[in-house]
Image (cartoon, rainbow, N blue to C red; front, side):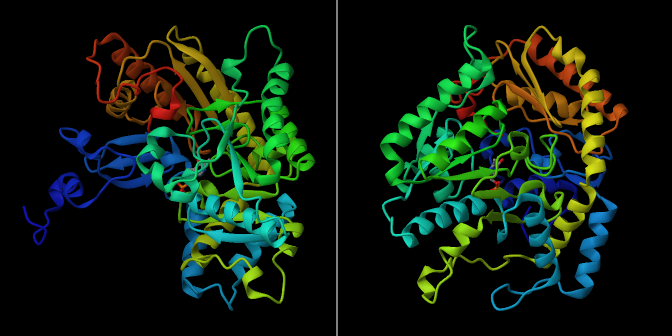
Length: 463
Ligand SMILES: *Cc1c(COP(=O)(O)O)cnc(C)c1O
């Protein structure tokens, strides 16, 4: 078949020829082409054969209120009739102003700088932090700290703080790797330590690092409460609160990357709220537009903003990109915030409790360990997972009508907030069925990807 005579019938084959898919070793698609999705309806994706597949990962964690969501769609459509896009230098528009004001009101962070994706938000926060210290007469404060296993995006700058060797090692010569400090992963808490003790133990490692290196460190970047891409590492709010104290004490910025956990996913609008922490920089993206359009935002303090406010152009934050503050994306974010009111957050907490009860057979499953749940996030680790567990499980789940992509040997659910109990039962049963098939079949290990199935080695797995 050549490109000038496309046949709609073999779209997956055409996709493999023309599209370089993300986060994918393309050779693995031999014999397993990508699935063609033609429509979405709430939690359901509908494929070209008319099969319904439950989007249990909210399409990489972005789709908060289901597919084909009427209010968000209406907001974008109405905005489209006014102004679809206009550059944001020298000009402004209502959606970007309203969105910035509403985010300020909620976070206390009054200055919103926009990008189009999570990695760009990381870049903006890191650049702004280092530039702040430069403007402040301390240009040597330009290093960063991240938490072990942290994920903050995959552009060259963001890879500096993304502690996932599989994503970073091929680009090692391009990246100035940040320092990493241990995270109080609740699964790894030694039995003899209390939770508070475990938090203090890990925080003391950060403090030792700061004692030595704060004078050269611009910022610490963290994913509040849950490191999703690391394989759903949960840590206590007390650690985040202690991190805030230490950053203040040692004069290092705290960047909260809520790209995955923000926008209600953790049970509160922002995960930071659960530790009563106000970061110096807050990054949002993914669910910010309810999964409709690419948008990210970095919010920061008056103090940071003031350090750039000057007659000298070069002291300004000149970072820009073409679609910054796109009106359609901002109107989608405003509609998403409208949907995420206090009543919805309370309803989500009820929903989470009901779903957690429905998921009891998973909690009790003999091969699932470390059951954990926060807000509308569930995760379990598969004990003695076969090599290639993630890929085999995903295929089995798909065959049962559920889109699930385990990270290494960690199975997780991150469903849209509109999932009902019947759909949750479908999801649970699809997961149980897929587990039984994958765990009972003997499989040959894949020596090329030895870490894919290793327990709790999230560094080597694809989200
Ligand atoms: C997904 C993610 C990013 C990167 O966002 P992209 O839009 O994929 O670049 C950064 N941080 C966290 C915590 C994420 O989950």
